[in-house]
Image (cartoon, rainbow, N blue to C red; front, side):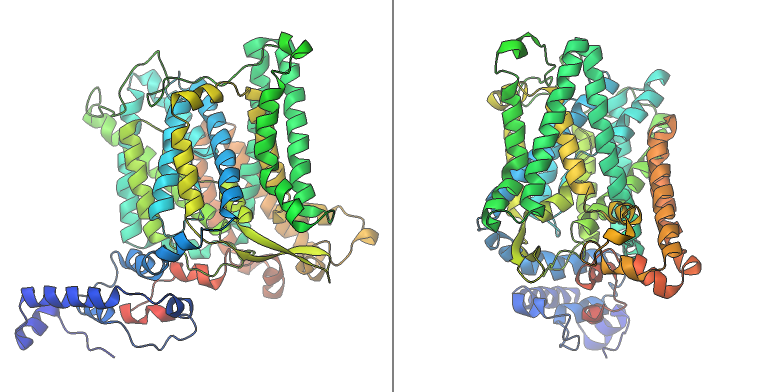
Length: 586
């Protein structure tokens, strides 16, 4: 065990100057810079390996708390696997995954842009959302420790943004400078949380919180689809409204059919089914965008299209501005500090939303081989939040259901002929798909592609929302429990549901499901009121509710009902070792 002496005492005893100490640090970095990937794959199996000199030196310098989680994330995940994250992406699976996640990220983001455009007097539009989504994809694809997590504009942040607008604009406070200060405060809080390792508390998140939040987000997507269609009656009248409903239903029907045909049936070969699963959603968007131009009676329907602006410029022509927000103009000192509580709420939302997204896309159902990164990624999220405020764009964060859908699209499936089911053989863990979809999103800000986006009917966005929500909600445990509860017992087969459903006592099963539905109802209910800005508090509250489950449920029953959100390999990043050179035992 390395004796821990004060640094000043060591320097005085050994005659080591600060210059020599710096040389020692550089030499240690050089020695520690060449990582052996195989060693890092096996590091959890052999915790007694000789500690690196860099670890011992950092222990001398008493670097034991501030920034320790970030240091371990970078050392354990980012550096040793960066090259393999690129080389592993040089495979066919990257192509359909990039196309799929590009569409499933782009079009909902545009739909949220439409939502914010209507609620913020044209302040946030298509170009702002494209810029935010592109920044999230490029930055997290290139630099994140967990590149599987898709980052972009979410439903909760859209609700947050226009709720702030409704609260502060009537008071005469300029909206974009105020939002900039909110983002700057939030950036500072992100840095504090990352450096003080507060993200470690996410290790207490179980599947209860993940499933409820995933269920909530997907129901919100269904709601947003309905709201888009309802808006068509106000924009273009009843003819366009009813035609939009038909278009959205057809698109949702064919999109879901293509997904479930590729994912659930045993018809045709697995490789052919994969084509339906991988390309069904993008092709539906393309087909039904062209469908309204078919002619005949359809030519008489005035479908509402996406409002687009000038390439690489803020969307609204009514409020011309540059990208850089003059956050020092029109804002008093009181307004700056008024933005602080809003910054706290935004940070709480991102703390929960982003980390839950990261946990879900790395959940235990995926056979992942590479570690994760939470502290460093949350720090990176703080940087993008601050930049978003300065540019006057919505702050991006982890996306549900896009993040788990991204991992799903990277799964290599094989058919188990013994059980008759498709199983996940492995996951292509790489960073190219996230980066490339960010680049493609940035390309959509050019004039030709903006014109193409301007051809998409708003009804197609509703259909896309329904495709994404229905296909994602099908696999959630909340949905499976409801399905199990209402299935005729005589028709239940052991292979239909999780084996744990058959083992748990029915009363505890129902009680746990009631907790899930109450949590969902509270989360969904508050977003439908003026108190929507308090939504992050509800998320945090039910995170603590889940922590008292051991006092409510018998241990053997709770083990069957709930479980850690991810495998030990992923949760390892949320357990900060007490000593630097003991990190392999974390």
